[in-house]
Length: 141
Ligand code: ZN
Image (cartoon, rainbow, N blue to C red; front, top):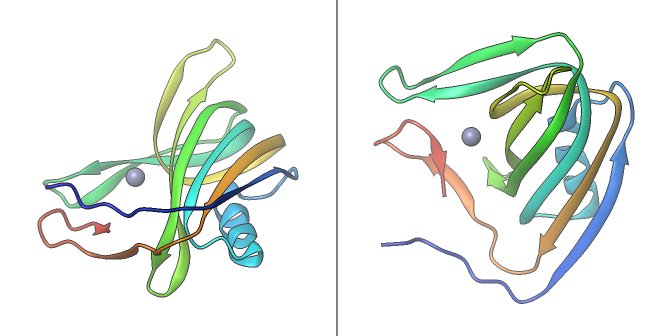
């Protein structure tokens, strides 16, 4: 069975983060400030350091990969909902190095190198709340 939420209205916010901003915390703060409780986010740009995670279901923990070289954000996509009463963004990224080699995963951190342009689609309707899921160990809707 598919668990889902339905929405009527939407507004779209386009913006740009500044060099040195952390992508995840800055977007989360922006959503909270703009009253965006539910929706999705997309972004592109470049980061100079950061980390991504791969969820190891057996270990019930993220395997982390950290980098400290310039990477293109070839794609960032995520959703906006609530966890523990706060605005929560769940984002995944594909990052490309200078030779176009890509890796990606669950975004842990990413420091903006020189630009990060984002699009946030804010929805009007029920706000999904993340709660602990015993089967996976993750906070899911
Ligand atoms: Zn994830």
